[in-house]
Length: 226
Image 1: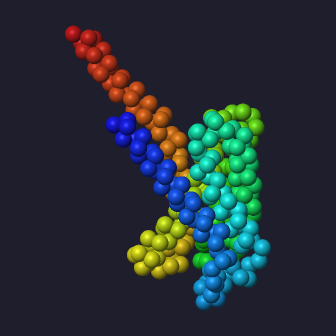
Image 2: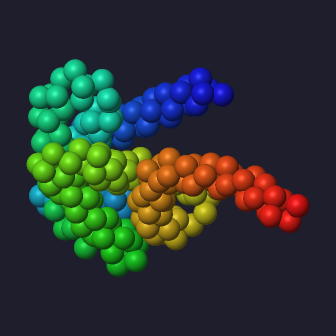
């Protein structure tokens, strides 16, 4: 059972890393592809300005580095590399988030989706800043917790594209409602899953404690009434 859980975690880590890599490559090759003004995204990006390359570079770099930051082996064997890549990761997030705040004004779907992306940008920077703050104070337990939340928000770029692919391409639902729903759920779902993972050990411990206490309470009751 334990061996199966280990393989499941490794498979999940592999899927996560490949997803981040795929979206990062997609981001970095964005300007090498032909654009069409008939595409609403391309048209909005053309008139937007500096925030497009800023967001693409920052988010792409954060996606590339996110899996590296989660590797325990890198953190233990090469702590300087972990710190250096962590600094680049945080700087990339700052660039991507500032650009996202500007891009959110031109978001497909208007304010309904733009407000979701703007809130994501603020929380993304906030979680990352909390993680860095705990690292400076050498509180590494809380540092890891907050950086896991930051990585979950970074991975919302992957979740967004999965949701759009399923809703708009596979299910053929109307694009704008799907886009607005994905804009909100891509990062809230990621955060919810992250919180469940972080809290799961304590949840299991409480369940185990309750399971141990139940037989004892019955035995005590039987002895009292005997």
